[in-house]
Image (cartoon, rainbow, N blue to C red; front, side):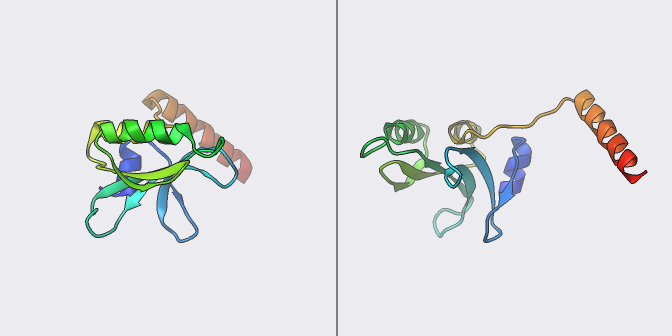
Length: 134
């Protein structure tokens, strides 16, 4: 599964970083820092995704990262990087429970529209484009 397929499956938005790599952005807590999910491709971790969790530091360590790490380990994630207030955990994108937990921890909002709402928005967009063209 690719990151684009994962994003389609869970109705998430993707972005590209300055290198052109695709990722799913999560909740930012600063202009520069935030959580995200990306394809982790190194020897030995083919087909795995990574979740990056970066928390603000309150003192010397972040209890948020320690708590998140414990829950991720209990769910079968593999910790790849373990910092004081941030870390990277690997997971299997095909494992539904792990995927949903990763989305929850990263604060990734899903966008799922009903067919009626999608049709209404499509009609509204078409009308706005027609008005702009005229």
